[in-house]
Image (cartoon, rainbow, N blue to C red; front, side, top):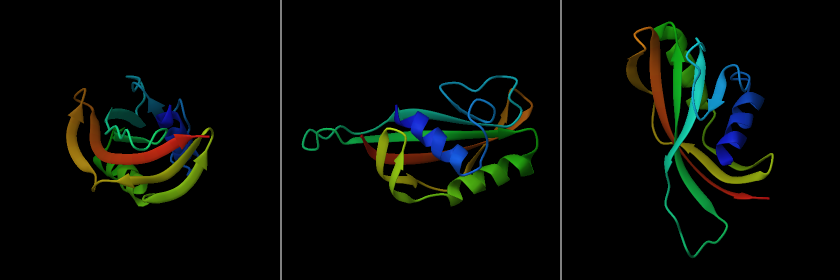
Amino acid sequence: MSLDNVAQFLENSRLGLRGKVIFTGSLPIDATTGILLRQYGGPVDPYLPGIIRIKFQAVIRAAKYAASKALADRLVALFPVVHLVVGSAYFYEICAEGQPMQFGKEIAVFETFVVNLSATWRSI
């Protein structure tokens, strides 16, 4: 899955370790600082077989507003990325689709930001 490859890219970029700060699927409740990658869609193009376009979110949380915002800003600063190979994926591009959006408090404790992203990729 491409989100696992994106998670690896974020780890390689020193935003945190996978399974400790960077997650796909779900964010453990005991992770006080975390980045959750979750896919929410993407168009299908029958004229480009094997090319996958996805839209996904990075949900960033930390106990303090400043820490959460700083991590979200560091994530956005990584993009756009073009012609990137990570694991079994070749990314034509990965782009942030805007600035971090404050999402408010999660579980009444964590300050949360959301960044919408998109990627175009294929398996190699």
